[in-house]
Amino acid sequence: MNHLKGINLSNNVIVMANGTSRGGRSIKSVDKLRSQKEMTNWVFDENQLPADSCFGLRHASVWASRYLSRGESKFVAVGGDGTMNALLNGIISACKKHRKPIDQMTIGAVGTGSSNDFHKPFNGKTIHGLPCKIDFNQTRSQDIGQIKNLDTGEARYFLLNCGIGLTANANRYFSSGHRLITRLKKISVDLAIAFTAIKSVLGHTNTPVTIQFDEEEKKNYLLTNLALLKNPHVAGSFKYPSLVGHDDRKLAVFLSHDQSRFRFFKTLLGLLRQSFDESHQALKTTVSKVTIKCDSEIAVECDGEVELGKHFEISILKERINVCL
Image 1 (spheres, rainbow, N blue to C red):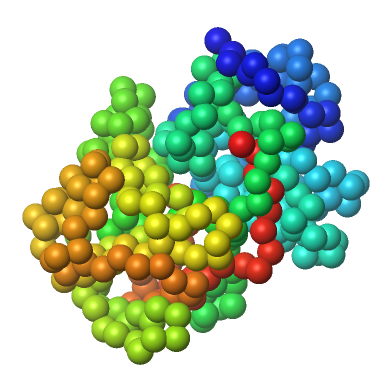
Image 2: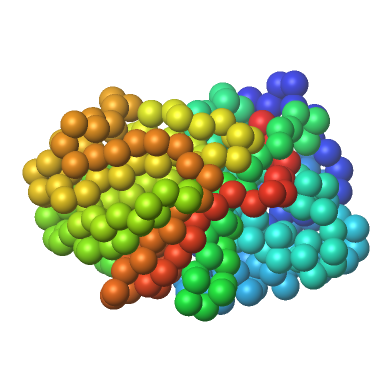
């Protein structure tokens, strides 16, 4: 069933369609969208995005460059948050290559993924039962987060959030293709997320790190988890308190350190109520930049996509991009 009343579906929209999301089941949704009469002028470019995120970004860059070179500026990601992230990174890379302003680009999405955090809070608009943000006449300017590996110089961009520590390890397991997780996703995404959270907490060990917020003094922590957010929704029903706006060039910081497994379980339970307790080895604030360094490799995720490294800087780009509402 579609709830598209009041939505003006533009012509000349380029669609990055990822048929592999939700364990490959989203391919049926892609076929339904392609047959939608209002979308007959949309260009569906179906991509089986590789599991290797680095190759996936290179692939997305080549993909976006092909369309930007033709003057296209309206894009839609059909997939999960990872597909949206690939689209974002592809567009930014292509804009740099072709010397086009990022703020002239507009992106929307149809959510066929597991969590679809980009669509939260849901606006009530759906197509074939899928959450959608595809009205190019209703848009807003959105900050872009950047995570830069200071050892390699490589950068990745995000719209939603960045996580380091326990949640990054959880995302890594959730996206691993492990047989049990795949089965649980088919039964219930929320069940798969809950299982992943419990398994990750039980197997977690705090990691020694050095963190610097903006230009403040560097401090050493035994890191349990660090969440850096533009969107407070992180996975399933977990949600942090809202501290920042979509275009204020700030990141919301939620740091959990030196916490036992039991204590972090309580932190997770609090997130189900949009609550974050600062009274026990925890900190929340807003910043423009965070630098984190570790002697050994740590997992870092942005919009659910995970990479490994030792030294990162997370900040907000000067440029913004337009997103559909």
